[in-house]
Length: 294
Image: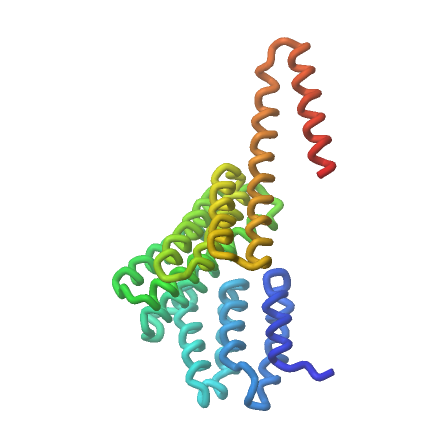
């Protein structure tokens, strides 16, 4: 069966968090699928921008991709706009000199979003934070609905990206990264409450719940998960939305459980009476055995 660009993109969006380099190596294959002139060229441009800058922080690969897409940009204004935004993103990420292309404020915000992700790839939390502050100032200065909406998307994506890598990490926690993740998730919730409907707000609560759970903050995670579920119930959400609200509750409760177990363990050295300490240790062991059966 012949692969279409639509199929390629659908599969690649699903796979890109786990296989960014493998998909980057196949972008030429995707560009070749544009030949019939009916494929979603603008979406491919967005995918390349996000993959090569936001996920891989590969400046030269993105420059090559922009060059390869120029023939399409010549006949498609939407593609040209994305490629200009990608070029600005390179500058904002520190991969070029000068101010970069002049773009409307909402497009600048999207470029800032990809540049923030590029900074997180190199573990430059302060650089990402500086760009987040810049994005906040730009949106406030423009004060347009489309800019606040762009900022809501950018902050949600930053929070989700940091959460994904936090959940995948095997190294020690990074408090600076956690702080940035939680700030971005909170800002996304604030901005979606201004420009979105109930579903955007509910999903922002979901994001906040998962971010707090990933950071080991069970009580805060539970509060946001409950808000997520309440938003679903108040608005007659379908089973799909309810499913993920319950996921948020489960993850929040698991984080809270881990916190309480850690606090129980921390109490053990302070129990001087050996008999009492042995009883407490047995109680903890029973608790952990019960949890393992869930």
